[in-house]
Length: 550
View 1 (cartoon, rainbow, N blue to C red):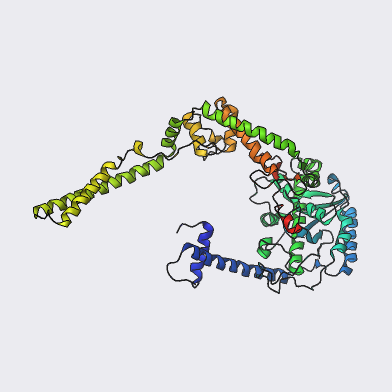
View 2 (cartoon, rainbow, N blue to C red):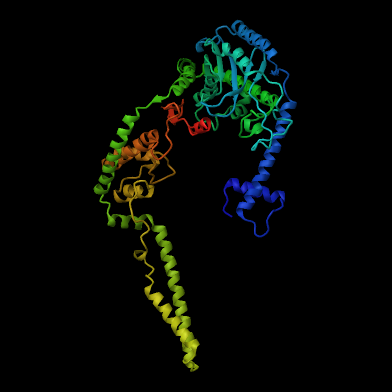
């Protein structure tokens, strides 16, 4: 069987387990993969249950999961005491960041869509008091719902179990989260998830002056992963963290924590903010003494999380009439540019034939070999029939039906051989009958074979050659005047396919959101050169509105 690495894992699991088949007959690839997938997923779920039980059994005494609204005043008193202690013991420590205290916080949410999902709980770490709190208020009972069969009663949230009231929690934490002089560190990165979720919940977080993901990119732009758990696992000695580090998927899989009990989610969430705090402290001290990085971070990077979320949520108002006009103009210009490519480079039937003989060489060689084998087979059949006819003639059996049949077959094979083209490359059929501007092989032939332009692929990737990737083409378009017609096609194609047509919903769903604006996702250090990147918001499709309207 031809298997991917993941399929190989599934098949091996099926073989190792000795699982009984539900079918008879030969074992097919799909059956083996399906059997193994069920076994692997079952093992993963069993392992998750084990890790959940282990996490609950090892709950630290200074982890507090609040489930009664009456506990909120005591919590806010502890938060207030933490701030006062920091002002006394850490006076001026965070002055460069423009705040006089710092805590690590995090929201658990209903999903990962920054514009739609709501929080289900809030966690915070108070470093001087050495206490962590989780305030749950949005957990739901999903037992019996399709897709949630995995939930065991021991770890699921069950209707009627105590949790806090959303409005009372938000009323308690909003005054703290909204004050710009009270610093917060979160592990958000490009999505700035927590700041978005706060907006969805109805308030604005201020004083978010440290994003541990972005800070890690500042310290090391070559990390394999910038997730909080992988970073903690790698740098836990530097951070002073001990023990196993379980990821979100280790405990909950690829799903929302909302259906899980407040205890297990709370322990996980508090551990999250504890790791976040220890990562922040290590980063903060390291950046302070590394090449004047703190000056840059405090003046620029610390302002970016709130700025990015503001810009992302504002979005861009698009003049659709102007966009439609440009789409028409550029479509006409693109057609002109395409015609210019064919005229400039002389792309005609002779050009296409020559291109086909070059880029289809493997197919042609296979055809020649197949043709050679066909001719050899026919030749052997002719020789065999000739021998058989000679034998029948020697036995004076030319009047028999057998003789007539052999003669007829001999003529048939001779005719087939005569009509069969010789096994020569020039006789091979033409596999390519048109030149396509979207075909990388066709463009490569034009550049490297027809125009004989020097291959500069290794400037971008030393392990490749004859590339037509965007970054390689940009070099050619700048350095090779002969490629101007092709560059013009590329320019109009990008303007139309990347910007105008998606905005107008031509050939695809519109890239504009339900508010009629274009929303982007800004990412600090999102490019290989360290510059900002901007990508289209890719949350839930706007078709979700149909469900609401219905």
